[in-house]
Length: 412
Image (tube, rainbow, N blue to C red; front, side, top):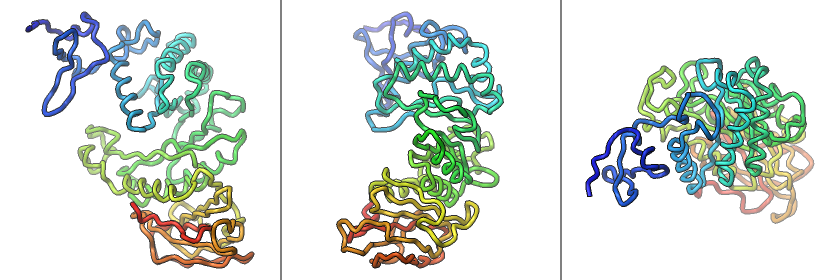
């Protein structure tokens, strides 16, 4: 049967939501009411609102077609074991972006109701984490603090199993906004750093109350200007921040992927976002993950001062050393940029499964994840052990372990 029924509102008239065309050797329309249905609305882009844009009255002003599409995205990410960090209300930086103006014009009651509706909708998705603020300055935050808190508390009540963090402006942390302890809804300390993110990671890791520290945003790869987002700078900011305290994770960004094909000057030289998917800095993030997963990384405790490292840490992102030791005293990991000889007190390592009084060590190239040289086995004593420079590398990772077989990151 052919049904000549067209127009951008047919999905509303027929009550169609939550079904979408598939792209498989062309476009395959979904089947509804025994018909193959295709509408321009699939390609025109839905608004989150059915009425006034920016009126967050929920559910009355919420467009189900828009949110149904978001549901399929989040569900698909969950099927692929991908974390989705949701910003229920992206406020942004000044009135040029986000919902800065609407966060002021909507009442606290309206926004709280919206947060309850939003987080009730996504409760039960184990791959969802919520983020609040989103590039907001400390000045704009002051007049919106009560609303943000009310929304976050309502969301936490609606979806009690999900985690929450706060995202401010560059070079800010959780502590620059929430100065009073007792924000029970806030589970993770967010850092918005850059090449200086390792020092902010340390300050948040050591702050009270104790919460996991997450480097939510760093400088992006392909960033124009200085720093210009080279693969080395990507490794430096992520390795330094991780081992200095951001053990809950770091997010990688790429200017050319972020803009999704819009030549706004941030991607230099401009390229289609698909061409950036295999950029060297992104691939280096895989090496970070794989090297850390050779041992129980979640047990890492950053080491500051001279408790483990007695040689110089250096100064500044391009010349620095960070290191951490697992709480069970089985592994020490250090990152040095550039590579250099490190003097480390290793007698804190357990002798556990290995030969009593011995440890194994290996240098790795973080740009490939592969071994540098053959490593070795040293006797453990109270004196510091010198691990020689692996050979004029721009950066290098040293892993010291108490078990005799060492670690082998060459398996991937």
